[in-house]
Length: 458
Image (tube, rainbow, N blue to C red; front, side, top):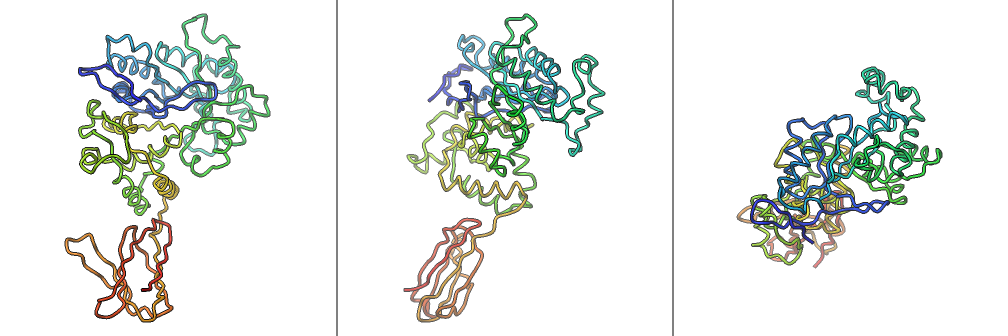
């Protein structure tokens, strides 16, 4: 499926954005751009560039004080796509923003939403509001509960009690305010009927106990979205199951830094394993990474080698993003590089060939260890001599111009076994006599963290 995007001539066709259907029937793009805490001078240009490449989701936070720049970036992005096309009225850009913990409490949350809607007031913007944190936490060093409270404008402090003094209940009052605004039971528009209502409401950084607290408090609306660290998606199955059971959409952050921070040093085998997968993937017809060159079908099987060579090399970072969106998880990567905005865009990721079941399993294994800054073990190969005579085992180095064989086990006697760490795809040769006239070749099919046994017999 393609969507016509009008811009500089000629008109170009870009893949329609991958979306998920929220529980309230609203569609949300799976591939977004994070701009929370991004340098102010980069926000507009990145949004414009992202929109050229099909990005229709922007993530920020009310505490970042950049929602007006998000609106401006979207407005300029619409003009960049085509300032003369009436079709722009049909383009919807979704903005997910979040209410900071200093605005927790019923009245303070109403003020935050009013400010958000004022900053994002544009006919093409669809606003999703989340509670950023359920509380200010004393165990997180960068959270300065009392200092941040003291720095608030008097109008906010006068609107409601300090939320850090009622950590068990302030977020419940915030959720009640969001429910009232979302359900239309609270006039939060200051008599401005043109103000956009909320497309959905949700939470961020909530745990099971926080969801249970909302339930006990008599919540009327189940959160539509949970935005959480990629760590919790991989290592908190109870939370993920809760989202699946209640149709709460899971959106991840901290994907790049959380997985790839210092990975070359802490997880070299996992990085190597990711590269082994990414080297098999390609992005069709995108050699110069421009919108016009990103045209083409996304077909995994019916391309010859010459066609594949025309594609762009896939990075492990893109592989992780593809892994998540293929599972229906939305991603909001933040970057300071305009080139990476293209690399992480809807257009590029939509044209990246789909992952196979085996590739998904390999990537899952890699993410699991990289998040912990651990590493995969090399495959363990075990050779059993089921022959009646001693055998000699060689590793065959096929990477050099002339294949060479290196002895790894001499005189493996009948009934004995030999263990060695190796790599996927490595080849071993077992010789059944000293003259090397009788042999069998064995190729390691196990991947990292797996074991494989070879029974040597004629």
